[in-house]
Image 1 (cartoon, one colour):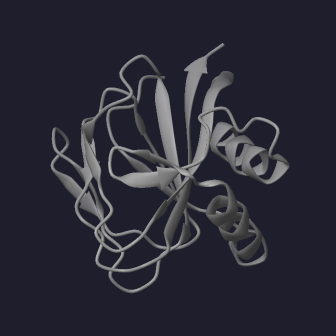
Image 2 (cartoon, rainbow, N blue to C red):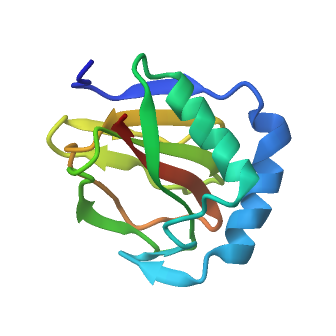
Length: 150
């Protein structure tokens, strides 16, 4: 299956997991990357991040392998520059914390602007160009990753 659009799903255990995830992300996001603070790219040893990645994988109808897994926190003014994950079949972003003023994710070549909602999982093709405009709130946090067909 080759996806051409963005898929949004509600994670059923968001209320229970999000406070734990937000704490982990905030404590470990120390590197500035493209305008936001992030963890390392290879957080495969963070079991809570893997729970989210496993949920993303469960939404795909073919076996996939997780190749990147990270968290990010956005303070006021933080952003993400225009980029894609073209070497991957799928990418995902899971919204952990979305306080007032949290910026949307904008998919330029798909003409979509999606408001973040805590507990929402977005799956999108790796080739989809996207960015996050400057954040107007403090504490927007995500878990994200990349998947390839195995």
